[in-house]
Image: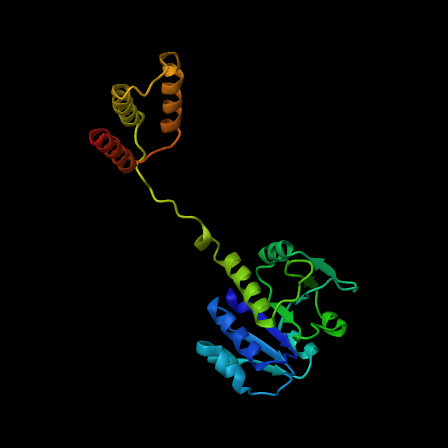
Length: 238
């Protein structure tokens, strides 16, 4: 499924960002990187240095002279932008973007990222089907190129690997009501010996509050045993 996603860097300026973008792809299991007219030419030593263990992605990266050529391998193109554009394209929230990916399971998806200083031009945007904007703080919306690639990779990775992000609940044996009642009776007996329930006319409500407290906790057997030991130990020390 990951192979249907491609990441296109249009006129990237810094080799470091190209390398870091390749690393982001590998972090989340993607491999298709396309590069359109990098400012400092290709190959780029700085890109290799920052790619670390993802150099094979750089070696396999496709080079293009124009955005129109780079998008030809895909069925659907999403463009990223840091600001709202005055262009006749549907702007999607990030949630809408992910929801659309769920529906277009059999299509080849290309995602465009613009140069660091200016972002994608309106001409580049004209090749896209949709425009997406990563939500940020309003007065500081510009995100580093490689960081943008990383965020998009991560969100798509979550979409593909949804089950990995489910919270796994350990199956703990919850104490029975009988066990909890024994704990409460034990504690109340010790408190009685310490004259805790004073004044006497409030004893009933105090016992009720203790009852409510312990029964809503859903204590495991282990936790109940620990509490019983603590209570007994404190009583003996006093």
